[in-house]
Amino acid sequence: MDRPGDVTGRLDVREQSGRSPGTVVLALSGELDHDTAGPLRDALAAHGTDGERIVVDCSGLGFCDSTGLNVLLRARLRLTRNGGRLDIAGLRPPVDRMFEITGARSVFRVYETAASALADAPAPEES
Image 1 (cartoon, helix red, strand yellow):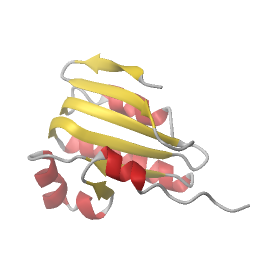
Image 2 (cartoon, one colour; image 1 turned 90 degrees about the horizontal axis):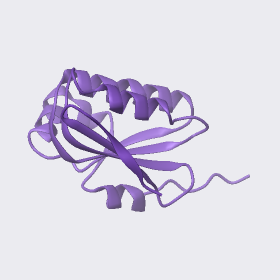
Image 3 (cartoon, rainbow, N blue to C red; image 1 turned 120 degrees about the vertical axis):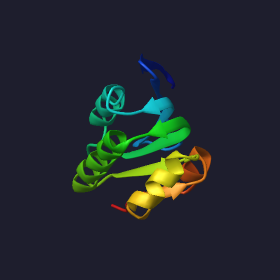
Image 4 (spheres, rainbow, N blue to C red; image 1 turned 120 degrees about the horizontal axis):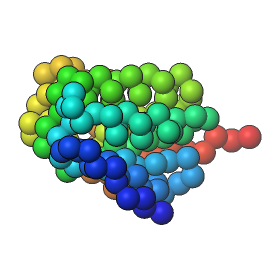
């Protein structure tokens, strides 16, 4: 089930259900910077317990500054501590360039599209 986005300034964050339980997609559009990072920070904070996976779909994101990258890095650390993960999908220039020159591309699992990220879902843990 999709939920309406949270629009603040120039950033839209839309939450979408993943294909498997415990997976959520956050689709971003607009610009992610110091002035607009709040809605993404809030959406990320609402998830990430008990091994949850978040796929951040950046295909609609035209700009990301260091504040935006920091929000993603902090969320990744929190999810990893809780047994989950945060993956990135759909990086477009210049956002992809920023991920590459900062080394963030090597920290995250980066997928071409959100669909390819969801197709690479982790296998369920055996009991």
